[in-house]
Image (tube, each protein chain N blue to C red):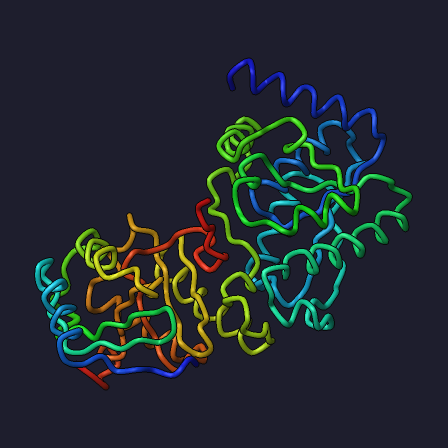
Length: 79
Length: 272
């Protein structure tokens, strides 16, 4: 697995702001190569698929090809 | 079926009749099913379908291939080969499909010769030309007969022909080989292929139709078609997906926020 790089500071704030605009509350985020992985605060309160796609579109580019939601919270390990 | 498409079908049937006998490379997908069904119509018992059974073919896909061959009424054969025995395939460069299809069609050609058949056909169609498909070059090198391509039949038209032929697979989603879920540069291994297969079986069991489990070295990035994604976002469904992918062997599970798109791991085309 490609090593993970936690995103912090102003970059994390920007991600939270973008995601929040479409109704997704983000706890944390990390980069794994060309993938940006978002950790949602509550997997039970996600926005619609079309809103998630809007978020992904807004966050892609600048070396990011895929934007994904972590599902680890569904296993009771996060979130 | 519209007259223009009917003309294409008539020409394909005439070509096939002139060939005398055909072996169709048969996966059980809609493309090869249409070619097999047309070959069976044109040639009867002189048409045969052959499925190359290897590590990149899921067990359920093989079962479906057997069932659709029986539905068509075409003689069905299977040959086993191992893509993982070729280091160039395992290496998983952007030319992976070229090596795979070269091996596959060499095997199919050998079986055709055993059966006394000169022509090996594939289900490649006009819509395949717009994507990254090095496998097409391998088929060209191996002189594979590609009736749908020769007569400029698009994927949409393939489905129309399949409906006309009353094939149950007329709307079957494209599956592609399991190695297409592994990004170039990461080796194709038996372990990776099997965990992808197991995780995709979970999605199928949950009723999803169009999906891919992309394997980023132990991290699953799951793509589900955008028109099915809202159902996947239900908490109970997410739990089943996450648990299923973990049990399949993935260390970490994520859901792609855009959803399924064909060839999402292919090299990015640079604009001029």
